[in-house]
Amino acid sequence: MAVLNVVLHMDDPDAKRLGIGLTNLENLIRAAGGPAHVNAHFVVNGPGVLLFRGLQPDLAERLSGLAEAGVHFVACQNALRAKGVDVSELPSGMKTVAAGILELVRLQQEEGCAYIKP
Amino acid sequence: MAVLNVVLHMDDPDAKRLGIGLTNLENLIRAAGGPAHVNAHFVVNGPGVLLFRGLQPDLAERLSGLAEAGVHFVACQNALRAKGVDVSELPSGMKTVAAGILELVRLQQEEGCAYIKP
Amino acid sequence: MAVLNVVLHMDDPDAKRLGIGLTNLENLIRAAGGPAHVNAHFVVNGPGVLLFRGLQPDLAERLSGLAEAGVHFVACQNALRAKGVDVSELPSGMKTVAAGILELVRLQQEEGCAYIKP
Image (tube, rainbow over all chains, first blue to last red; front, side, top):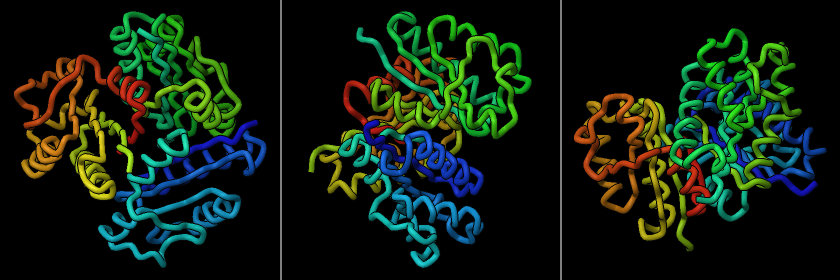
């Protein structure tokens, strides 16, 4: 099976929705036959970055586990600044990009990623 | 007009939102000049499968009518299992796929489907 | 940098969400180095057209400013008719299309637009 390219997008500070997105990734990796078959990105921007203020430990652990398996989690620096969320509050394995919206466009246009909004 | 390839995605058990998605499909088929000009898919996963527990008859009828016109409605087996929804509860014309998320990626990458999240 | 092709989609009459979409566009244009580097579309359909009944003046001004910078804002005529919203209620710079859903598919398939649902 060829590599599956995908980007998930989250801009709502809704922990239940984050859980759905993480389940999507877990199911995709299993269905694809393992993380080597998936090039997956998860971009959080807008009010979505407020998710990381006091994130439930079980969600943080699942996110970090997926990051270790190769999923690229990034938060938007514009959004972090606008919402007053510090990089130190992000879960382990999460990086940042200057503009989440540019990353979402770039991944679809340059890397041919399918877009999913959980 | 060439065939329009599209996949709609629903993961919320929100009947109003399902109605919007069905209207989207009805309008698309009319605007395209009939069902022969449309290759349309509708993927339901996550908590969205709870829609089919006691679905309003008018929505079930519209869905089944679109399925007869050629729209491919599928529910995610992972989600059905996780939410305890039985295949017998699905409306007429709805099928299942092993992993809804994989179907959403596949349709975009292999069939060139546009993605719409109603 | 090549031109970035993108379409944002809104079908919820949620002013906060409209604000997020406008911020997305403002951030994208800045990150891309100016409006000449962006081919951006914003399609409003379904109940989303109710946004324009009594839109807050600050949101209307931001939208009109982005339209002057070249963003293509369109509302779905099917939705305007169904919700009883008159074209005269739309903010300055906003146009209409016969079927918003067809425009969303067309922009992705014919213009290679990335899709974003704020």
